[in-house]
Image 1 (spheres, rainbow, N blue to C red):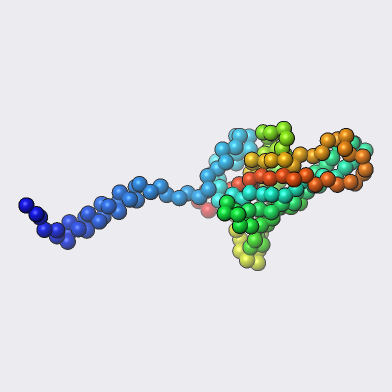
Image 2 (cartoon, rainbow, N blue to C red):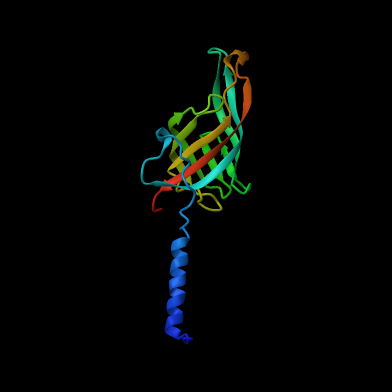
Length: 182
């Protein structure tokens, strides 16, 4: 026996179908954290809101008096997962988004994961500000540098000329954190 579909049953069926779909699809919560060692994890109450891949150089200056190379500054371009340029990274350390907003960090902690690469770091916001085109980075509270490749200072035995500079290629992923709920 065929039962006629009445309007209330149709609405109930559609509502049930939507409920099943809603429960099956996970909510997008933004980028996930990098799973970095705890020593460079931001405190509770913060969440990742932006991930950028950096390609560039770490610039070192020779201090002949100590026969050592000192970090002068990084210089890198920041890229989104799709390859589009997000901004740049330079002395400070400073990160600037394409909209002109910026964040300056201060080192909190570091850990060496690979002896051939620069350390993974946790940096806390020291200053930030909007740009002419927006405020993408102004809410940043912490920046993590992880997945580093290269960037280590040259060997001390190569430091002979005071003031000589060396640019060492590196890449890294930067995770930008903000307060949860903001």
